[in-house]
Amino acid sequence: PPAPAAATTTTTTTTTTTRRRLGVVTRAAAEESTAQISKKVARTADACKKLGRFGFWGQLVLTTVSAVILVFSFLFKGITKATDAGLYFILFGIVCGYFTTFWSLGVGRLGNKLQSAVQELDLVPPRADVVRQLSTGLTVNFIGLGATIIGLQATTGVLFAKSLSAAAAAPFSPGGYNPVLALDIFLIQAGGNCMLAHWIGAAVSLWLLRTVNLPTPQK
Image (cartoon, rainbow, N blue to C red):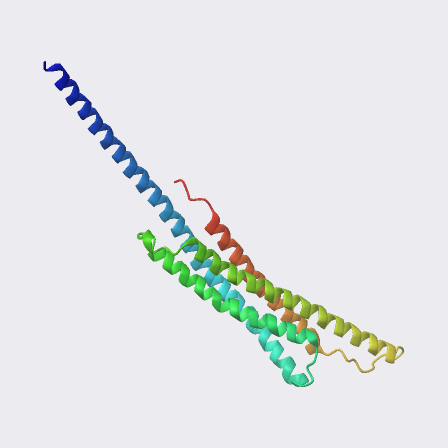
């Protein structure tokens, strides 16, 4: 009888239609997921380019000013006489500052790389590599910041000791010799500039890490 054949044909047609619908839904979901990932990559690329440029120029200016002050301090005191421990800690902080300054250029290049990979997601670097690169700069910033703080503490202690020794040597002299030089005070300014540079670098790294770890946008 023809009834079973008609039932089989109807079942086959229904199955084929269902498969087509599932395929369309699957492709639509994949396209939507790809679009969301592209938006996240574009957002991260834009943040890397803008913040990398800001971090580079901000740290470059502040670190260079600190370096100039430190060079004057070495030239004035003499390399063999500049034995203040704080001076060398601040110098180490400046070296770390220059490292993170040019590391910020790498962040900008990472943004350009991500921007070019928005349409081709296969070219996007692994998330772990991006996090590792940002964490490296953040670690150096914190090391340089800690060294600069120690240098400022040591320099402030030396200046305080010089003031006390001068007051004890001539307690009633209204205009005696003052061992605290203007360049010594200026050295504190160098440390402050270096601290601000490291703060900028750390803030940039933390914000970019936050951007990378944000959930994928839904729209």
